[in-house]
Structures are given as C-alpha cells and as structure tokens.
Image (cartoon, rainbow, N blue to C red; front, side, top):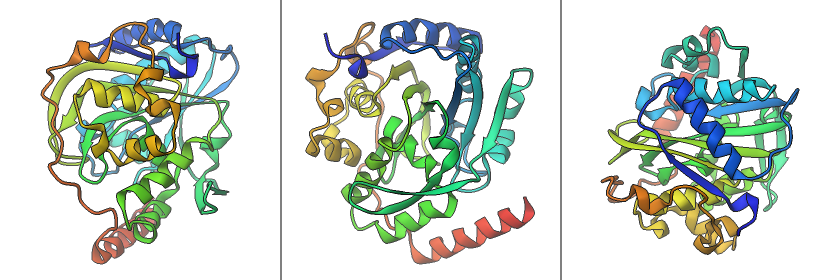
Length: 311
C-alpha cells in the first residue's frame, strides 16, 4: 500500500448540506492516513475566494466551508477561515459569497491575510506571502474544482496561490509570466512553505468549459481528500478524463519527479477516479497567456487602491 501522503480519498456527495459534508469528511479522514490530534491546534481553512466580483460558482461553496469547519471544530481545533483574494479582503468576499452568514453560530474566526513575510523559493525568487498561512498549526486547502483559461484546471495546487499577498499576485503574473510552466514552478514552490497540510476539494458542483469567472455549472457530485496537493490534482485529472500533459502544474510536477504526479504511487481506499467517469467535464481549447495586459494590470492596481481606501 502507498504511504499515507499518497492516499487520495474520493466519495460521492450530491448535496451542499453541511451536516452531510461533515459526516463524509469524517469518513474520508479515517482513510486518508493517521492524523495527529488536532485538539487545541490552530487550523486555517483556506477556501478559494477569487474576488469581490467573482461568481458564487467560482468560489468554494459556503456550506462546504461550514461543513469542513464543523468537522474540525468537532476535533477540538481552533478554526480560522482566511484567504487573500485577487480583489478585496477575505472578510468582504466571505460576506458577499454568504460564507460569513453560513458560519454564524460556529466558533470560527474569519481572518484577512494582513501580515506579510518574504520567503525565498527554491530558485532564489523572493515572494511576499501571508504570515497567517505560515503560522497556523495545520493548513487545510478547500479548493473549488474548475476549468481555468490560463492554467487548464484549478484544484489543490493552484489554490495555494492564495497565500501570496494581494498585489504581489499581479506582479508575479507580470514579471514571471513568460510561460505557463515558469508560472507553475512558482506555484508548486509555495507548497513547501506551508506547515502540515490537508486538502479537501469541493467537486460537488464544479465550473467547466471556461473559468475561473465565466464557466458553466456541472454536477460532478464529488469530494476529494489528500495530504499531498499534487496527488489530489493527479487523481482529479484522471477522474475528469483530461489529458494531464495539458496542465502546466502537472507537467512541472512530473518533470520534478514528484511522487504525487505518479499514478502508480497513488492509492484509493474508497472510490476510484473511474467511478466518476462520464461527467462531461470540458476545458478551454487553448490557454491564455499568463502575463496580464499592461492596461488590465494598471486598472487592477487602481481598483485595489480604491478598495483599500474604502475598506
């Protein structure tokens, strides 16, 4: 059997009922591998929040966040929910997406990523990331499965880009946007910066055909859990019947020889990817460039300034 870091647990879920999600999370966590006690530990749930103007389909569903929070609270953890959206604060986006309302009555704290720390990646590049993401005891990614015009699909690994602070995301697009694979190198390097981690993917209703802002809904009815984000992505590419070589993140992970990119290293203790075949999930025919249009970039900077002043 594969090591616990390469367990990928897949289950069917056709409802955004928080209690059903919490119960399924409990089942899946028992199969993902031995977890240390979370009692008294600070757990950061990192949903995919996109931006103030992002459609609800692009973001981790509010009840999915609430269901995950319920399970971690039941383990005795101190639960935080935070992200650094492309535009706006996590608090504002959570209000707009209904996440704040969904978490009312739960002992959960919403946190904005406001503290910065510069970290060096493997190639020496310095990146400004959120201190809040690094200083928790346990990082839990809650990615939303969706098609993506620049990165093919966005899943567990791409969700990590949210730990990069605000405007620094746009700067990375501009300065290091020569190729999709170069940008994927940066995102993959973020994985090693984080503390102990888990990734619980919202694949119940996904966005396909296009994305991350303008795709169509598709009922995939899937939840996925893994300790290794690369392993989760590899499993989902197989589940969605996609050519993994079209994914820049998977290509780079494979070139690096990461175990999570190797199908024979993955173990599925419950359902297999083939159990979800025939979903009809589709992706963009061609990928857009990584580097933003300069006018779009400047417009984005102005928008961030306005949001910061009005906050």
